[in-house]
Length: 350
Ligand code: UDP
Image (cartoon, rainbow, N blue to C red; front, side, top):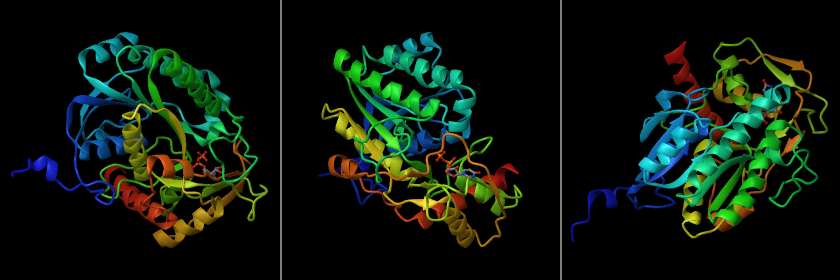
């Protein structure tokens, strides 16, 4: 028997699944697919044989990151564009990454956050709900606010302490109502701290301006900035700095693939995605020093508003139901891939 070549191709994620399933008529619509997490999901799904359609307004994303699938430059506020897309393309599922994500900015300018993250998402949901019955939402651990218990499980109360976290929780509430009334299924993925990059360094983390801890430290390591500010040193943690749960972006991408499979079984769920280990800001700086071999100067600064002292997630539910396992569970592996990418990005853009 001659097996078609595509079906015997070995996936780079061969530990988890060996067979590529082509789905040429059922496109996956990746909104915000030119951004950090969306572009990694696009790469993984494309490698798995899915056909992808990317919508991005490029306000934060990079066209260079859309290396797979078909790209449309456009904005979720454009309802006519959305109607046209759902009419013209045979879309099987929607994944929604397009959002503003900076906690501090959301406190200074909540209007932009509610417009982008809530109003525009409603446009997307209203445009899709007649035709498409599967939705994957990028949510966040910021929906929990200050945790009462660590590690945080999905049934922990949600009391967000920033407009960013509130905007994401609003959509989760809307999804619950919409899915019940309009007969569609969704998976909401509450990411802890996304970090690292594609191990083949085709894509990675690239924000302008950069606000995230690991790329800021790596900027200091390559000499692009003089120092790293440590936001708060008197938090109730062993070394006084905030503790976060860093999760590799390819592991996040893999969870989206698994969530898609779950939606095919007609189920809706909410999952945390983290490693279940916490690292303080100072520990991350030390690990970056070790990996880069560079000196990193630090300055102790005041707390950043909206930062809970500790965020560590339990991903037991995702492991049980999605059969998801992080492959880059070691913080050193996460930072090594970030460092490889960071050096490449700066060779090409400086
Ligand atoms: N942080 C810091 N200096 C920086 C950037 C971040 O001390 O220049 C701290 C921040 O206060 C938080 C942690 O690093 O406790 C992770 O911040 P990041 O912005 O990377 O992610 P967030 O937790 O806000 O999603």
